[in-house]
Image 1: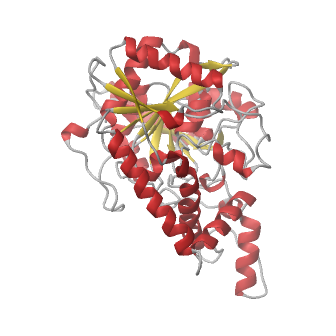
Image 2: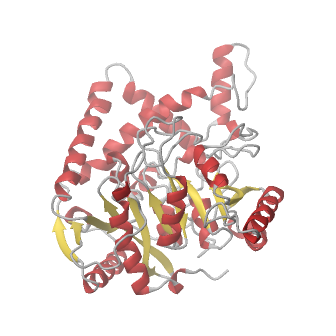
Length: 459
């Protein structure tokens, strides 16, 4: 724990992965873990492991800002369910990591705390919105971290930072205590140095919760542990719509090389089709802002959070939200409000829901032919800070390969599969709902075959 805190302090001026450290609490928890282990009473095999937590997940007594000025001074009054489970297992919480404001972004540049920088190249973004968590794991200031994934916010930064990011099946992990962005898409998940690390943390945080009606129990055959070591007989599908002209040739080359390695390990490779893939991003940017508009209505400056003074109630609302929300949050609130408004609901939101159903059917049909789907995680490597901030559409396109997984509620994992220009490239694996074990087995076999030394940045 002290070693992680030391690295975090050393890296803070360079990468700014954390927005707040809990040094005193972390060292106390680590000392208690030492006592338990020395007496043979460890709470779990992860007892004492230092973990970072994204700053839109509640940890009682610590600030929970969601990287927004409207919550800059908000202190969490309770623990999120995932935090309660981690504490019960003896894990040590080091601090809160940076993110895009309210998890809305793909670069961790919209934070009220300032941007986080990629540990591989401090002039570049770490991805987002869980960029602080991915950076902390990559720079070794945490052994693992929690993030949230609404459209790729765990997998995309993991891919850009050279670590493993796991987005569980929708409903596998309770979202209670995570500040909501888009409730039908949000999912908490782990970021780890290895596939096994991410899987181990998932086993701690998963399970039913009376405080989240969508969180369900897994059956014995749905557990992530005990994946098969051999890939013989495993069918891996390559969606032809994801390998098209315009994709960066070097990134495609790294992913294709990973496919060849998996084939050498015994996997059967097959081309499949997801015919409605081209519509996924458009549907997502109707559904997500619509839910954002509803969820963020609660931030009005009356019940909690910052409040701007106005001469009347409406002016107080306007000033509070105008000053408290950044430009990207305001953009999405307005897009969602428009899509849900009278006269436009049928034309936009209802149509997007119909497309969502078609995309779900595409995945179901594909999984009749294969066990796992394989795609790139991101169409590009980490870009320069400020490069896309003035072009929202270019920023949105960075999530083109990850968004469909959230639309359908499937599990996905990003695993490092090489480098381009000295920067990490991620490979995404997708499986059927609650079949993370199959997906993680493929990821683990690949990781063991190629090793991990290539994916440690010089710090």
